[in-house]
Length: 494
Image (cartoon, rainbow, N blue to C red; front, top):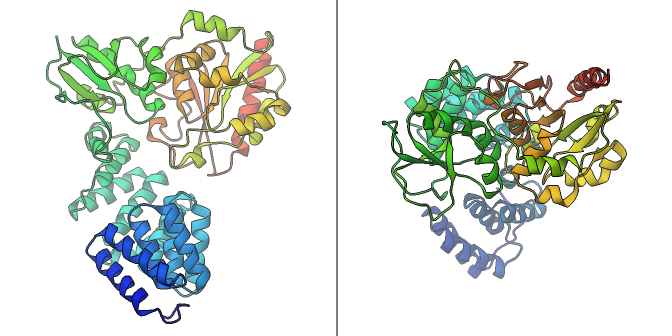
């Protein structure tokens, strides 16, 4: 294949070849030095720029890789391989629609590389186009050189499409083929949990702890289920605030077995977590002496938690009376149904675009008479609140709320009549406090915790679940919630 290089100088070619040799032996630093030297001598050396982009992609520097690969494509728009890898760089940055543009352009150029099918299947999975992704992957499952990668992605497609039993079988196949990565084993756990097979799922889900080996964790002996009576066990919060709120309930049954239970959690959650029954102390490093440590989400496995014996005594988190008084004074006019709204999840979640709802789409809710609305949103979504809040009638509690802790959010929730939220920590908080909560949940892929298709939650009895019918479309669910809210507001005023 020829590209718009012209003839590189001897010095540029020599540097390019040094870069290739270093790349092949895994010496990333030497390869980068060599490629940069080649480009310094010949800035329009397209193959050197392309290989440098590949190096940046390999070393997980997708933004820099995008820049180099875009330059290679600009120099030669027919360079299909550059388009494939540009799409991969965009994938790593979660720019899925832009990635698919590059993959489609590469296919139009006649590219039939397996890497194109595999990368595009990844993109289509993230865009919710599950059948299209599966169709691309199916031929690759018969190729020995791509079978493991194709089956791994196919299992994720099945899991995200709401077909967890099929995902379980594919992950089992991968294990039999020797693919025992932490991601495969952790996703097997998630698939088992989604299938309702909690006992098996908790065990497999332990592999999640290997996904981020560099995450700081308290040093100490792991509790393995031995008699905890008279022992101090430090529970280490992990993942997001929603997981902390959901799983901190298990501190109480652990304490009931005679353990002194400590908790390490984000600073913003400390005050509220101290109200959880069974938590003797919330601690920060440097930690006082303790006997055992345990990641919080490992506790259900060791307690033998199943769908049938799940502790669901709520409320188990409680707001402070003083804070309740302060936030009560900040609420809009009395006499109407007071509704708190959260429409976006945190940006750290890779599929946040699926679970979130654009604020403007909730306009039918805000039009319901007899209700006043308060924003419970923090972080993402504040630009929408500033732009649309006054028009929609959504009350902004200002910088004091943004600077507040989870205890402030809990106090505010305690003073509301209803919380309407997407799948984020606000929904978990309202549920853990036993407050009425309506949760808008996406079509597959929805999280296993909510048990797809059920109108209620075994974790949070006060929650009512509104399930999206078509991924990316919320109109019918918002109409359904608006009608329900109208009935609720009318009943409140009677």
